Image (cartoon, rainbow, N blue to C red; front, side, top):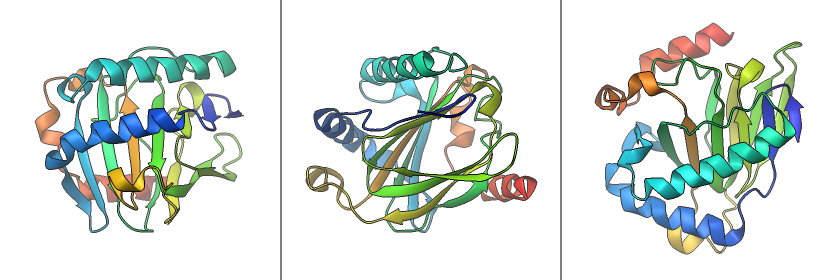
Length: 208
């Protein structure tokens, strides 16, 4: 489904088996999790420094190719970095743009994969500023590039409804795998491992 130019939503993009595979893989980097907020943890690094990077890159190319079929603004280039977020409560995050130094400066799409608990993902239409709400369930994917690359978006209420087949692996959490194309940051990841609350607040203020 094309929400607006450059923004594509794919419902049930990952099968149950694929979700289990991805969730199981993420257990291998749990020791790298750092607190982002009281209710959210994160890992940020180059994809090739995560376990099984070939699988992550293959999956990302597959999903971007599906998006490109729907909207040619979705560029099918391998992302360079993964931001892994673990939401442990109902709280999400406010409106912001992915335009920080480590988010990438090109129009290559941000690829976002959701596992576990559902959430309301809200965007502001690039032409009208109208708010559009999309419920992201486990296995759903949203990507935004081209005209929509720096759109405002937020993660609203997280519902504690993790599918039964994932609870033994991740508990009642929401996992988000955000892949971005930011080659200019390769080799500089260490300075972005910790969540920069000041930059985030400034980013939110810019969207108001």
